[in-house]
Length: 69
Image (cartoon, rainbow, N blue to C red; front, side, top):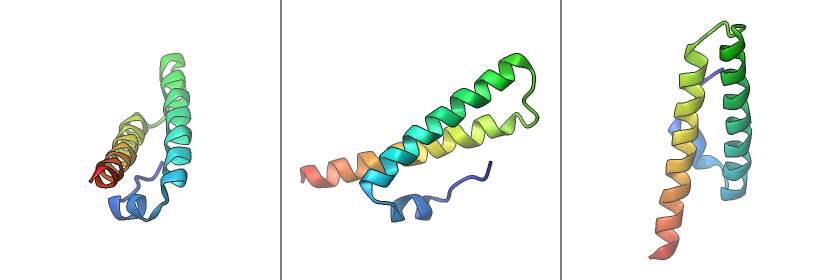
């Protein structure tokens, strides 16, 4: 799992961000399942995906606030 840079996140359209958020949440669910079963090789992947989700949510919120102005 490779972390996304904030500049990469900002380049995506709002629709693409929502799709990315959905896929990241699915990926996080799968990683948590693997962790519970004991087959997760790299525990830091969970942290990376959680940070990516936070980045996407932050950019979506920024855009929402900019549209409100």
